[in-house]
Length: 158
Image (cartoon, rainbow, N blue to C red):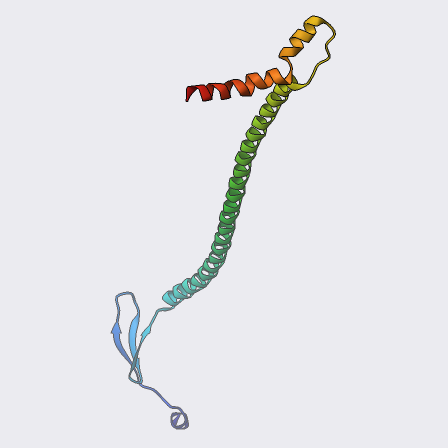
């Protein structure tokens, strides 16, 4: 026994306090430690395992949340792009409708001009009545009706 005492570095262990939960506060070489009962240690070990598992699950859930956030931002960008395309198409539609109305007005006015111009085209006369009616269809008479009378009225009113 003496030989063992000489070769061993013994430390002083002293019970400082017994706590209400069944654990102890002990002092080993002047440093205080908390000593737990075996069943309490098993509970702590189980809690540590559960904590590690929950941290793993939490990190996986955080990764999933980040992935969902990225998908949400991509969906928002896609929505913005579709709105821009829709606005562009609406602008094109409005411009096309305005162009169509303008072209329709041009067509209508051209058709009216063509119908008016038919009066200036000489028609063949076959009878005396056609010659008399052709006089009203002549360019000189048409000029008198459309130009000379308004000019004469304007000069007379001054």
